[in-house]
Image 1 (cartoon, rainbow, N blue to C red):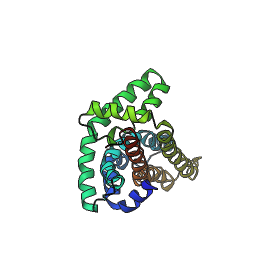
Image 2: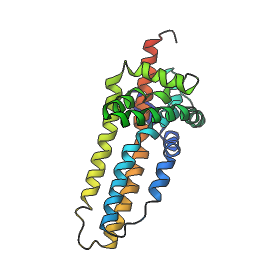
Image 3: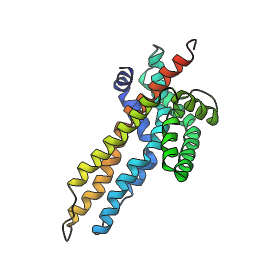
Image 4: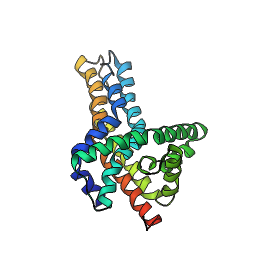
Length: 227
């Protein structure tokens, strides 16, 4: 499978790109303090869920970072590790505006109704992978390609969110219900849960990003055979 081969071949640079793409989330997770009481512990647990839900947006950005590696593999011209990292950094920069546009569209769609927001998440998931110039053009390209590959994209996104939800649920079962009164080491476990959650998201994100970029490249080849 192309996505798996790409991920295994470029594990180190793709992981570095993931750390960069998720840097804001990582910094926020590191700022979560040790809860002082049970009420703050519940809030810390909610942070883990919020970070997991919001990880979709950095994932869209990361798709732009991994796209050059996937493009090279699809073309039969694999790049070196350093070239993948360099091209990936450029890809992250290029995907920033499309990701911002996608995030704004998803936010507005979600405010109107939940379903439009969910549909937009699927349709805009490939914005970073597009090689077109300009944010609006890349967003439109993502929508055009995603319409032909809705089920595979949906499968990747559902799998990502499901794994995150299961991981948080399993980890939180070790901490809940809270003893009365909660011990300091027990409260510290909630901060650790947040950090472990974000670390797991960052390490697993390249797999999903490569899968999405692969879906885009293969769909684009079918749409434009002469490319």
